[in-house]
Image (cartoon, rainbow over all chains, first blue to last red; front, top):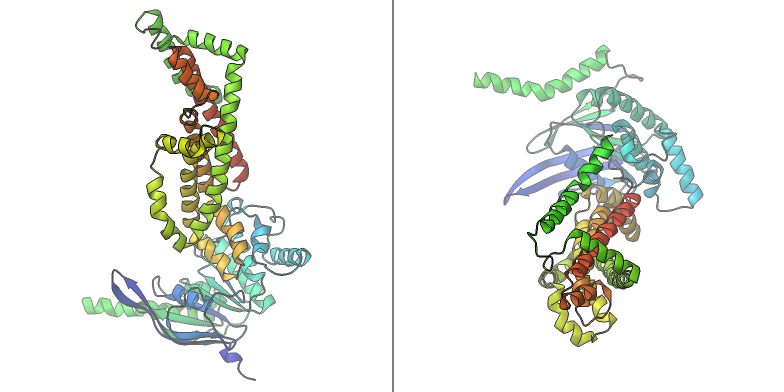
Length: 259
Length: 249
């Protein structure tokens, strides 16, 4: 049908916050179309509104102008067809890994739930930790459980809000590979918000670059790199540099001006 | 070795206080009628124990407290959950609760006698009053202070409301709820003397007031210390249960 390029469509999104009686704009005229199965990374400095944009897509934040449409349906509230992974793992401390994951399943028999949970625990490589409580897990493991929980409902879109921001460098790279693998095996549309340029270039099919105050889409970069991606090859570095310059070229001009 | 050291620290102050108390009696600095020596108190304790009066009164008081406490706990928990969940209910009930809460149970005694007469139910009601508001307020606070981030997780997956309440909101509030249960139990227990002022002829409160009339300060002190000791034991028991229930913290 050729509609797949508009699987997720954001049109004319404007968002305002009020602080101390003053209204200021967080997101300005955001327009974006996402294909089904695409991996989008939204990159921006902190405070640019990228998380707010993701929350709008999730339906957690619906007070804005413009609309978000997924698969022809307008987003007005959170739905389980859009799974969400947060920066903090947000596991329920009183449930073990297994129960944390099965908590989000509201339908189906016990057997079915058990099977799904098992499958997703395996998918994120947490086998053997089913009975562990969140406080017994390392940051990376907890985040894996969080990803399994977001996936177990078979969402059509996975939204990830700086999911590896709090992890150490090694775990982070490992988790990026893991997410990449899951994207390949599950083929889900994924939208990941990050301030890590490397992460974006490694993961994304397209990178959305945002500028701050108000948050606008400055540029969308296609990442056409062969898989598996090598963080050290020239093409990778070229894209990395291009994005880097989007953020820091501006500042150099500013400095010249000051001098 | 360390543990023994901590144990010694734990009981040291009590031992010192008793020792000073005993010495002051021996040197004649204390009038034994006003404050009998610890040894005398101990002898009275033993004799009350062997006579059986102490145990009978203790059991009666404990059963009154438990009745009032369980009632306060159940009502505090159920109402607290509802008030905590619904903002309208919170606003509607807040002022009334804030006004009634500071009234000490003793001030209720005249009304309680009028309403319930001098039977058991009035005493249980007073003990109930002693614990109810503390527990209610703690449950409400616990539920309202629930971690918004965790609630959001539950919302994003379209969790049915009842499941959301029982598996996320209440467990999240559990530490606060338990604090309420513990503080509530100690207030209920503190009310036992007040409750037994309502024309009683049984219970620890009665034992104390009765002994006062006969100038038996030693019996008064035994009664007081037993109340303190039992209060401590009940709190420790609840703490133990809390540790078992909230094993994730």
